Amino acid sequence: MRILVAGDNPVSPGVLRAMLANWDYEVVVVSGGEEAWSALQSADGPRLAASSEDLVTALETGADDYVT
Image (cartoon, rainbow, N blue to C red; front, side):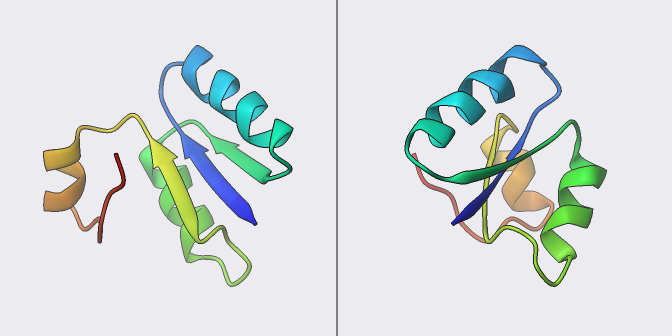
């Protein structure tokens, strides 16, 4: 499964990428919202995304759901 990891902080996405890769996930790391949106809209884009984005902001701007 491909998972998108997005974040402005260069450390957090790297740590999450390493953890997910250890569990045999294919990880796509992007640095910002526009790049994440583009990756998710592509035909072969990841179907799951992880972000450090504020939950309220994410839902107000179109996120469908969240997992805590």
